Amino acid sequence: MNPLEYYKTIKPVEAKKVQQQLRQKISLEPFDGDPEYVAGADISFNRGSDMMHAAIIVLRLPDLQPVAHSLVSEETPFPYIPGLLAFRELPVLWKAWQQLQLKPDVLIMDGHGLAHPRRMGIATHFGIEIDWPTMGCAKNILTGSHDELAAKKGASVALMDGDEQVGLTLRSRTNVNPVYISPGHKVSFDDTYKIAMKTLTKYKLPRTTRLAHKWANRLRRGEAEEGYVEQ
DNA sequence: GCGACAG
DNA sequence: ATCTTGTCGC
Image 1 (tube, rainbow, N blue to C red):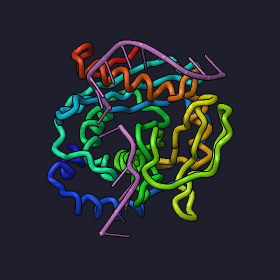
Image 2 (cartoon, rainbow, N blue to C red):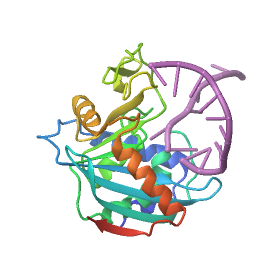
Image 3 (tube, rainbow, N blue to C red):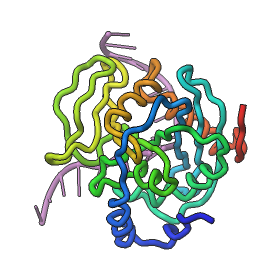
């Protein structure tokens, strides 16, 4: 059964309490060995609609070739509230994860992990729920700030929330605005950097994110069907 | 009180 | 997040 069913009846005040409770379960233990498979998770939806379209796609390393994908559509009863994104998107992602047969070594999610006011971004929250290594990769900052960053691909600087590091600002492509990566669960700050670099090609966003986004959109437009497919 | 605010 | 054409810069 889906432990996230509970989140469908929850209200914002309770949601924040859940985040405070989950906080003590966060693990930043380094990832062991070299990952063989990485996956990307993303959601797509029409503005104004609560029907969420989720995609998780698994890529093989180091060639980044897709080997499997899981697509699921489901309605969400929770609105978008900054800081509470997980309660809107996790239920459908949970189904997509359960349906996925080939589990990756690490899952890269759209949005933040630790780089969250209560250190409980969607990547951390989901990692704890499924007890799996996860990390966040966001296009915008939710909380925190950082020093100037060199313009060359691979440059990085700590993302700080007060005097605490919550993530890394990463130049994923030369002369392009950076992305913000942070540990979700069961990975270290160093791991997030190494893993992110393995997934970058010629674009700003990791190939995992790009492909998950593409499939989520196909599902939304009816160009792809729900289900699990392995190559 | 005011401004900020993942997707 | 999504809706959209052209356009600036490496």
